[in-house]
View: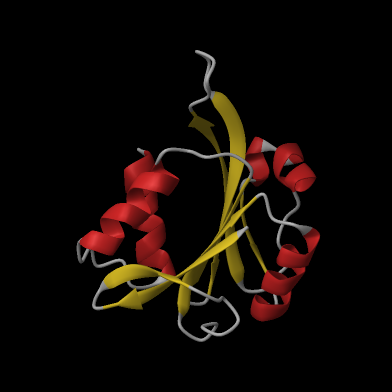
Length: 140
């Protein structure tokens, strides 16, 4: 699933359709993306999106890198489960131009709380880099 966000009055707003709003989208959050969704994002940005296997296999020394003019960072983040132990899984953050792309296969709490806050309050998160900072702030 792709959830795309645009800026509206200094707030984030969910866009109904990524392709129809592609010139305005500042954040695309890929949750359990299909191959077709990965391909759509890759075509849109001209940047290769890492697969789940690539995200899980990445070595600690390689978690920050630049490829095709985009900045990549992969972090292992916790998410609550019905069990007592949190689920630890990688999340990849991609800064491509003024856009942020996140790729994940679980639901860290910040991915619920940050967009809700950024929709209600003008947080200054109006570009990919400021959204990344706001999201990392919510994670920490």
